Amino acid sequence: SDSTNLLSNVKFEVEEWAKAQMKEIERLKELERYRKEFVGNVSHELKTPIFNIQGYILTLIEGGLEDPKINMLYLKRTEKSIDRMISIVEDLESINKLESGELMLNPVKFDIVKTAKDVFEMEQWQAQERDISLEIVTPPVKPIFVRADRNRILEVMTNLVVNAIKYGKKGGFVHISFHDLDDNIMVEISDNGIGIEKKNLPRVFERFYRVDKSRSREQGGTGLGLSIVKHIIEAHNQSINVRSVLDQGTTFNFTLEKAK
Ligand code: ADP
Image (cartoon, rainbow, N blue to C red):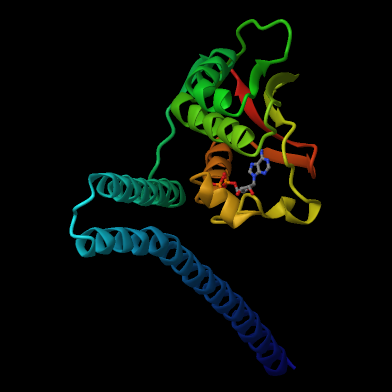
């Protein structure tokens, strides 16, 4: 009859509503877990330099500030720890802006080959320290015009190049190449360094993820760089990928929109 029909319709709708509510609760729980983990990671990362600074200052106080050599040593260490805290806080600010959508992109037409050259020029000193050669390997190297936020893409390329140097091989290379994909340009940055194990590969874009925590921290790494990089590329509606062979090297590639 009509009334049983109506009743079963109502029952169906209530059930659907309850399912949707359950789903929303699951989503909120997941967000809450994520937030807790994030706060935990941040405080953990900041604790190390803070405790270090406390230790250096106590040493100075208790040592009576007599030996100028020791004073200088501990002051330099203090300054290094402060530097580290600053870079963590700056990375956090970037992530926050990117995730809240507060960061507006300012797309302009520019030559990506020139940007690559600028990045190499700025990072040359770091490469020299590890005897690594920086090369643009796509011939012929003429301008390639893309449309994107130039400063943000500069940040992306700087991050990838600095990583390639940090985790690269002493005496090795960092190569940048450009590939024409019709609508897009693909930029590849590769090194012949330590590589990343297959099982860790999908995790490198996660916040705070580092394959080797002590090595990364020693190099001044926070584990936030690649998650910022991914955010920026995705904000451009483009994609970023990585492939790697342990002990042989790593290649990151990302796409950009061609400028008309
Ligand atoms: P970090 O500040 O630790 O460098 P990133 O987010 O930039 O953080 O990178 C995350 C982790 O991915 C690094 O700690 C490192 O283990 C790994 N990684 C990134 N780039 C490379 C690379 N070119 N070769 C090998 N490992 C890399």
